[in-house]
Image (cartoon, rainbow, N blue to C red; front, top):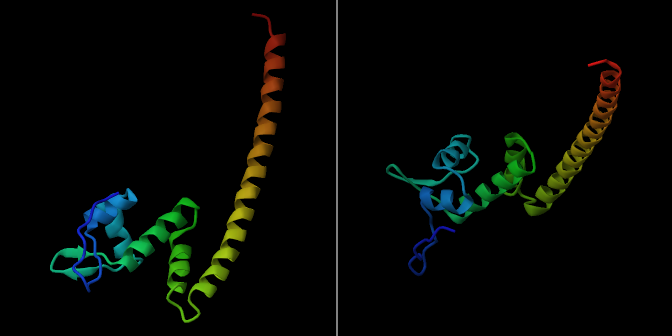
Length: 136
């Protein structure tokens, strides 16, 4: 995990792009890409990006959503709901609905893969049987 200097008393802790990239094990380019998409919005001081706790939280949510297979637009909706008036409740209700959809999609893909593997096994068996009947 990236080391960071402590914030002076009474000020908010901030991080550099290097620190958040190291912490989340992503490239600077990835962090800038999410910024370009408007998913995170670090403070700018000249050409330096300053990341606050909110940016780090959003980046963590983005990366978790990507690992779970959610498209970036769904991730945007989920993390933007966090700032909505109903806040966390609406976000969780939406996320639960998305999880149900994602799970159903993955379960269907698993069934499709199982069916394909079964069919491939049958086809392989027929090919081996046919091959065994052909003289060398």
